[in-house]
Amino acid sequence: MILHHYLALCKDALRLAAINTVAHALHINQNPARCPEAIGVCAPGDGCIGQEVSRETGPRPRDSGRAPRHKAAMDLDSRYPGLTDLKQAAQRRLPKFVWEYLDSGTGSEATKARNRVALDAIGMMPSILHGEFAPDLSTTFLGQSFPAPFGIAPVGMSGLIWADAEGHLARSAARNGIPYCMSTAASQSPEDITPALGAHGWYQLYPPRDEEIRRDMLARARDAGFTTLVLTVDVPVASRRERQTRSGLRQPPKLTPRLMAQVAIRPAWALTMARRGMPWMRTFDKYAPSTPGTLPPTAHVGYLLRTSPDRAYLDWLRREWDGPLIVKGVLRPEDCAGLEEAGVNAIWVSNHAGRQFDGAPAAIDMLPLIREASALPLIFDSGVEGGLDILRALTCGADFVMLGRAWHFALAALGPQGPDYLFGMLCKDMISNMGQLGARNLREIPKPVALG
Ligand SMILES: Cc1cc2nc3c(=O)[nH]c(=O)nc-3n(C[C@H](O)[C@H](O)[C@H](O)COP(=O)(O)O)c2cc1C
Image 1 (cartoon, rainbow, N blue to C red):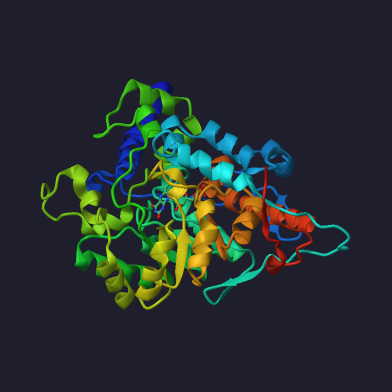
Image 2 (tube, rainbow, N blue to C red):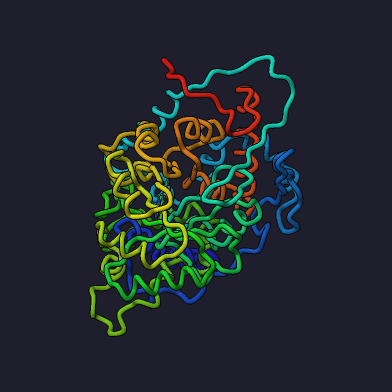
């Protein structure tokens, strides 16, 4: 009886997870009306290990109340000293097809690998005899002050990793004073996130083709409290993510014994999803075709999202959005002049973590060239795995750094407290490396030197 009930839960969780995962992977959505009603709010400490983070001392474990005693007593710093440890724990917790969705690149993943190799090739000379000091990580970006020069990049369908993931990420960002950039393809709507947003809510736009919807989405983002608009330009077409397909994901999604087996060996994930309700791209509920059958059910979000923007589109956005406008997914220095001309406020250098085009250069290799080509503030992402990588990006010309997967590894590994833990880990890692460099603040980070 219990087994039967459990299998039913797994089946339900799997059906919806598979549908949503494939939908995002292919930039297509199912009919949202078919999804269950609610995504529950995961209470702090629910099924996870609570902790506080302080800039000076890093994360401090504490009992969350509901967490098992042995877990609460665990020393997180020694169990999860680096992102690799969080990543391994995340992989153990997530069903394979969710893991593949989160971790995979496109093609043979050469671009993803190149990001790592290129970051590792950037060195800086350590310094000696600089005495004692406490490095200052604070910075200003687009006229705002931040306690550290990094934030949370947009990730679609975060809710697959943890229930109310976007809420947890936004609240952690607000607590720590860093930006949270919410994806158009998030599993919650801009309105859902309003109560969780701090001062630095950014909204990422996958450019809708329909002008009315476009206008409405901007108004919703503005009314929901997002201050900054990020236009993603490196998804002109859907990419192929072969690892996701290999994991058993199909289009149209199909429940197979193989996927069932993946969920069955991750009961914690399956039960959380079943209890909380499975995620879907809630932003688009409002735009679902009123007449069923107007669009093929699998083409819904594809229709809404799959425009490849051009310069006229960017000009339109610039006219409509009066806050800071950032263009994300830039790799070519020669594109910078046009972006400056269009009046964008910052350029986001990224190869989408190697998820879009496997022939792209490492994003970090393009950063110095883009720095040379433009005086605009620069954001960097793609492959950042720790404080040293953040320093590498800064020394190569970035003004600010964003991370995508890392926050989700932390969420999957530690639940709602994961992002705070990661924030502390990244700060401590930056502080330690700045101590080696003799850099008292971010302006004192030395120039890069090429390694081996
Ligand atoms: C699972 C996943 C989903 C993503 N979804 C989006 C998205 O909806 N919009 C977007 O602009 N970028 C998206 N990205 C790209 C991230 O914003 C960011 O560019 C990238 O993850 C940075 O590299 P990192 O994960 O190595 O830190 C996604 C990345 C991942 C891993």
